[in-house]
Amino acid sequence: MSQIYDVCVIGLGIAGLTACLYLLRQNVSIIAIGREIGGQLMRIPLIENYPGTGPVKGSEIIDKILKELMKYGFRFVIDEVAKVSREGEIFKIETRQGRSYYARAVVCASGRSPIKLGVEGEDKYLGRGVSYCVICDAPLYRGKKVLYISGPEPHLEMSITALASICNKVYWIPTIRSESIGKILEKYKEKIELLENAKLIKIEGDLKVRKAVIEKDGEIIELEIDGVFIELGYRIDTSYISHLVKINERGEIVIDEKCRTSMEGIFAAGDVTSLPYKQAVIAAGQGATAALSALDYLSRKYGVHVRKVDWKI
Image 1 (spheres, rainbow, N blue to C red):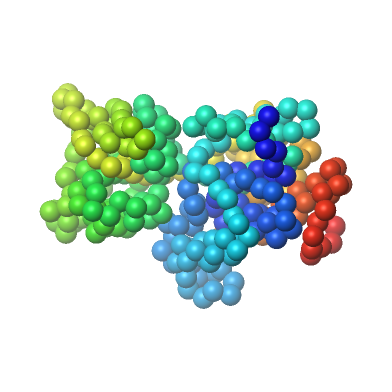
Image 2: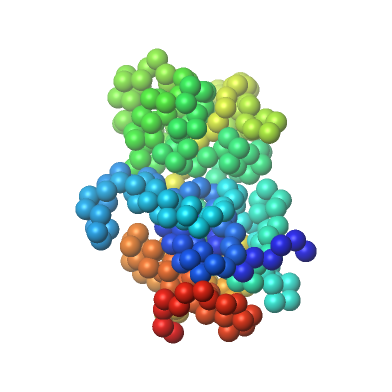
């Protein structure tokens, strides 16, 4: 068995990042795993109800939290958790890319999961060319060629505008016909190539994405690209933990007022939980609560020394 962390935080949205901040301040060892930094908040262009900030971009809130975390040596892994299991008193966390981590406690803050295409290479190249967040990762592809697969309307224009302004070439496969397509194409016709009636079959590469294999009108086409952006919407996915904790009829993790689940040592926060009102400020508060409950658990069960007591149980 490799290194055993005090806590594994699953999810890098505002709930998970807040939990990380509270845990790191107490000098416990953590590993944080998520598909992307910032989660859904990165896609919100304006938030007007987050206390103390005034009107602010969601990404600006995340940036500020990250700056705080880096002061404490924050470590994170871009990957997706496939399964959490228990080995004696220790939890084993396995990822889609074949990594395994071990922790004494787990905080589930995975939020809503991006809807996947389920094609070959999609999991393999996550974080190495495959992304589910244009606003998060588009700057990494400046001057490069990418494939963009779009779904519902909400952030379509913002995403394709970001890609077209940064990348040299954008191949675009819309899965839903939108009235915005014509307007966007007219504005960025030199950068965007629309591939209607096409579907992605396979993603290929070496250490990173190098090629996308698509089918269009019965013809197989290979596109030489540097990245694939998939934005088809979100859903709650608790399959990685549902065999260990109680799940309600909506697929959410059931928690109590201290963000404890039905299994000792597992805590949850944010949109993935059974509590109502899915708001950023509530998710952040739950992240703090879950972290404090995890610290209390570690102190009681393992005698982990809490350096600064800033809560009252």
